[in-house]
Length: 233
Image (tube, rainbow, N blue to C red; front, side, top):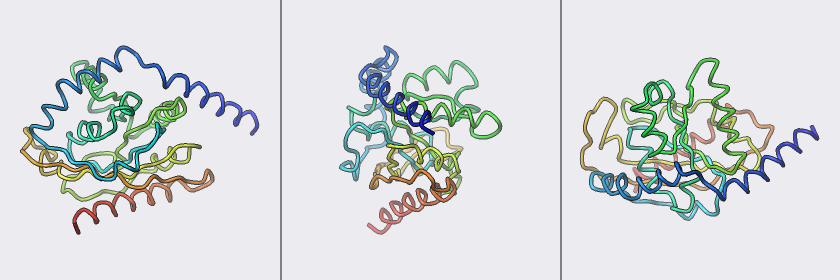
């Protein structure tokens, strides 16, 4: 147990140092997002942000968001504070975005994405990689539903987000992205003009001994509450 705590401390110390330096690819991606991706995105989907006051400090955070569209990731990145974005990694479906170079290279550079296996024996190694990012001071964007919704309704969250949420010193920020389903639903080829709003909830902390399934369900409830508040307003 002592060895485990010592290793965790080493990871956090190295994380605080490594978080100050970023690779050439990281800065290239940020430059391309700032100059090309975000301006083009805002022409199609003007972006509003609610609850940005909940995103204080440098993390690490887990942004647990609903998933309705391929626009979700770029919209969420655009909504984040600029100081935080170079240290945000996006868990992207390995079986969709990383099946060929022409898809994987732009996704890695533009979206800071890494391949995440959604099911099967390799899922455990993807969770381990996500844990390593968090341990080195990076934040994560994850879509705990595992896939885009077909009808705009929130689907049940997978257990993986519960496991990651139990890592010490990591805070989970429930996130609701409103409008991307209308702008570009699953199956659509081209986006429609639609205002999009990103709602950040109050950060959540979980005790280390909690049940990951219960944790995932609680995060889901908080995201659902953000959605309900959006509809009522």
